[in-house]
Image (cartoon, rainbow, N blue to C red; front, side, top):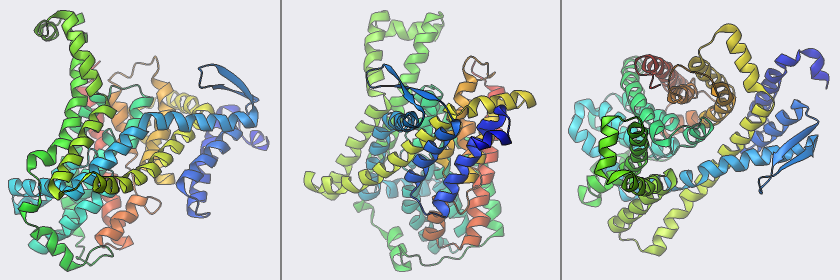
Amino acid sequence: MFFLAATTASYWPFVVLAVSVAFIIFGISVLRLHAFLALVLAAMLAGLLTDKDSWDIVQKDGKVKTMSSMVGVVEMVSKGLGDTARDIAISIALAAVIGMCLMESGGADKVVRRFLAFFGEKRAGWALLWSTFILSAPIFFDTMFMLMAPLAMALRMRTGKDYTLYILAVCCGGTVTHSMTVPHPGPVAVVESLNLNVGESLVGGMVIGAITCFFGFLVSKWLNARTDVPLRETNGLSLDELKGVSDKPESELPSFFWSMTPVLLPIFLISLTTVFELAHGAAAKGTAWGVSMVSLLGGQAGFDAVRAWVDFIGHKNIALFIGAVISLWVLAKQRGFGLKKLEQFVGPPLETAGMIILITSAGGAFGLALRSAGVGGAVEALAKGYSINLIVLGWLVAAVVRVAQGSATVAMLTSASIMAPMITGTNLGCHPLYLFTSIGFGAMFMSWMNDSGFWVVSRLSGMTEKETLRTWSVQLTADSVIGLLVTLLMSKLLPMV
């Protein structure tokens, strides 16, 4: 191929990366291709540029079949897409159902009101931050912002100030969980790529994410003092409708307990599997608390029997299924819906989830194509040559891909595919959890006009493009850098190795 004459073999994978990412940008922004098509075509392009004579593809029966160059590329892309869908599809679909139920039942509104009552109206920004942070654990950012933006507007009408602060509090809380917590598609895929325990990633992501949110909110206050965004009517809501959000009677909302249960119960069940896994390891080493837990459950046989059930109900798909069933029950009870009406409400979020699954799976295929092209090995060799910390490198790769093509999910998938082979048999000096969080924070870096989230925030908040760049873009960039610093500090203070 003529490109080979322009570069050495060791740098060819970077050419593959640059050309394929440039194709995604060109395809989406100029050719107006759907993100799914752009990612699939980019994956095929990367595979063709790899210039292999043949491909070894694992078939459904587990056997490896050798295929010719071009046919092998198509099969490789199909396999990458299918493998990613297998890991994320059920989780994303169930999370979409939970999110819909929280909105339609009024459960999300209830949580926000309780947080406002706890923090007080003077600290309404903090209330929005933490209520968004907790509620957005199973809810996609776009959906979460659609839910919370009217509440931020209603607060602005009530207080007469700090609209920028309220909007950024929602952005800060919602974007951090989007990059840090299962069942969001990016974190799910990175957890699978790095072979992390789901419970550990969930707890670690929430803890590090919460610390980042705290400091990120200080940035929100700083931006609020410098950019006073006025309250404007948006295409979705008039000012009269905004007033109705804050005036909705409590009798129309479910209880706080049932509003929180569909979110917190899956998190608890998933985390419980980690407790049992740690207890098993501690007991094997003779550690007191692990031995005590095994004894409490009737010895090793009893412990193993209980753990089998805990691992089942704590599997991310089963835990989210339980949360979805509860959220549907809350919606039916609150609104008086029968099964037929519930079916009508479940359809749209599943359709939305289907599109997200397709795009995310195409991102997985793109990541596999880059991995097959040797991008991971080339990055590893470059990092060793310059002695770059792998946590910083994971953040940097994710940040570059994010700025280039806009999607945080694709940035996480691509970065995980590149970084995963680099930690196999390598001593990171800390738990791989920290590589997971660094990739997540890198994928938040510098959201601008090629990111759909930029336009969601701009249009639903009533901000101009210039105001969105001065607030949203700066906020996410600051959160990304703060998250990296928190990750590096935690990896030194609590390496967990």
